[in-house]
Structures are given as structure tokens and as C-alpha cells.
Length: 339
Ligand code: NAD
Ligand code: TYD
Image 1: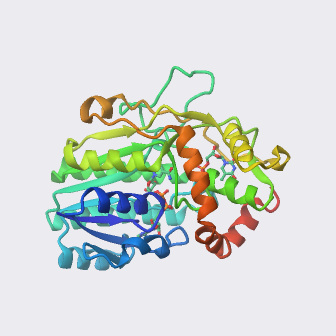
Image 2: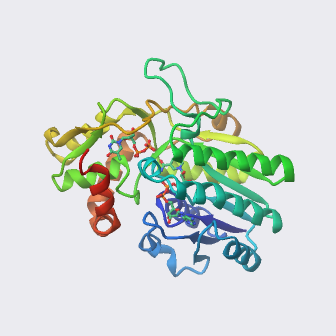
């Protein structure tokens, strides 16, 4: 079995690569990644020299390069993690989100058609459903919830989902889609809430909480997401969407306070800043379908997962300190300078 993993040098893609190398050592894994600011080849060091792993530097939206890769490698299965993934950056500059997330997906789908790939899996997000109100805790996103996007990021991801469905219906392409809630864990780029707050707290820098910090996200440990995707590849039904989440809703402010407490830093570091434009209030996944159909359940509690994650950032300061010294500095200035 030859698996093409796109975006494997990013947060979830690298965790998925490690998960599959361990769980399915008989598979051959190929990682295609453009190495944008969010991709880090150093992350893949542990698997780089292994005989069943190959890294290819390239852009999923580069049709010639992608078709050459498929011609040479003939993957059996494709799992598409490659994306521009940060909402704030999509608000600043939507163009690259459409280019990678929509056009890149189309190129991959075309290549899968041309080379008769056995399964194309699209890694999507619960953000395609828009948001839920804070005063209706009884509401959750199901697979039937209409798409209702808020940010250029979520609009680009929803567009890609629609394309996948269209290729399945029109060309009979064997696709599956998963829509997961917010992930956390090792190797997440420090522009996202949890690693950003850990990195800033360790440097005694202000902790920028948007608005009043009351927005709710549904957090899942990254390895549980990886296990769900593996299960969908193995047993999932073609054409099906699977929501993935662990019923772990938290307000942003409570997460930031928990990080302060764990790192023994004062809450006075918390700084309320101008809210994100179009900020989604609440995400909450109903994961009962994937549980019923595939038997998936998360294994890591938030209490355990967040402690492991904070420990990982403490033990791997080199990994993220190198990242935050580059392009990230000017991004941080632009995003938070006058906020
Ligand atoms: P990430 O930003 O950490 O990593 C994205 C990776 O894709 C990077 O390695 C980057 O170099 C690569 N990439 C970007 N553009 C590319 C291109 N044109 N061609 C090839 N490679 C390219 O993102 P992540 O958090 O690991 O998210 C992975 C996927 O999971 C995304 O599709 C995202 O929408 C989805 N997702 C993320 C979350 C989350 O909480 N992080 C939750 C649900 C779904
Ligand atoms: P983020 O990690 O960007 O994920 P997403 O927007 O895709 O859910 O943000 C998670 C939540 O944290 C979101 O409500 C925005 C908020 N947030 C802050 O309050 N401050 C920050 O500096 C960042 C990056 C996010």
C-alpha cells in the first residue's frame, strides 16, 4: 500500500505520518509538501532516512509537478492535509487560501482520476459549518448541518469539500471527507492559540486574547484525529462525510488561564485585544456518527493532552524558537502590533 500524504511537514500531517509509520509499518509513505512558513522539514527528521518514507518538495497546485509525481509513484491512497490553515492570515490575504485550498484540491482530484487512485481523503474542518450561538448548548454540528462559512479560510475549505463531492458524483471518484474540530498537540505552529500562548507565557510576553475570550472551541488531541483518519481509510464509506470531535468545549480565556497556571505565570500577562473580524462564537461537533459507524472514540482526555502538549513545548524549545525567529516575527508585528 502506497500512501501519498500532502502537507506532511505541517502540524497534523506530520503527526499523521508518525502515527502511520508506527501503526502501519508495511505501508510506503510519500510526503508532498511545499514547505510554506507552516511546513518544517526538521519536524520529519525522525522518519527521513527510513526506507518506507520519501519526502517530495512541491506544490499541490502545480499540475505538472503533481502529475509527474503520480506518474512516477502511482499512489494507492491520497490523504490531503496540505492547506493554508490560519484564519487570521486568511482575513489578511485570502488569495493564497483559494489557490492552495481550492485549486490545489482540484489538481489532486484530477490526478486521482487520471491515475485511478483507490481512495482520496480530504481533511476538512468543522469551520465549514460556521458557528453556533453561545446560548444554545444543545446545538451541535452534525454531518447534515448546512455549510455556512464565516472566514475566507473556512470558505476555501468548504469549496474544496464541494469539489470532492462533485468529483465523486460526476466521475465516481472514491472520496471521503472528515471534518474535525480544533486540534492541539506537538508540532503545532506557534501562531495558533495554544502554542502561541505557551510560547508567549514562557517569554513573559503579553497573552493576546481576542475580544472577551468567551468564544468556545471543541478541542481534540491530534493523535485522536490521526486515528480517526486511519479508521476512515480502512473502513469508511465512499462519498461519506465524517465529523470528528471529542465533546471537549472550552472558552478561550479558560485555556489561557490554564496555561498560565501550569507554567506558573501570572494572569496579569493576559491582554484583551481587538476581536478577530467575523469571529466565530462556538464550534461543537456531534461525533456520534463516526462512533456508531466506525467505532471511533477519542482516547486522550483534555486534562492529560494539554499537560502532554505543554511538556512537549517545554522539552522542544529549539523546534519552535527557530520558527518564531523568521517570517513569524513580521507576521506577529503586523497582526498584534497595534491591536
Ligand atoms: P499547518 O498549517 O500546520 O500545515 C499545513 C502544511 O501544508 C504545511 O506543511 C505547509 O507547508 C503545507 N502546504 C501549504 N500549502 C501547500 C501547497 N500549496 N502544496 C503543498 N503543501 C502545502 O496545518 P494543520 O493545522 O496541520 O492542518 C492540516 C489540515 O487539517 C488542513 O487542511 C486544515 O484545514 C485541517 N484541519 C486543521 C485543524 C486544526 O485544528 N489545526 C482542524 C481541522 C482540520
Ligand atoms: P485559532 O488557534 O486561530 O483556531 P481557529 O480560529 O481556527 O479556531 O484560534 C482559536 C481561538 O482562539 C479563536 O477563537 C481565536 C482565539 N485566539 C485568541 O484569542 N488570540 C490569539 O492570539 C489567537 C491566535 C487566537
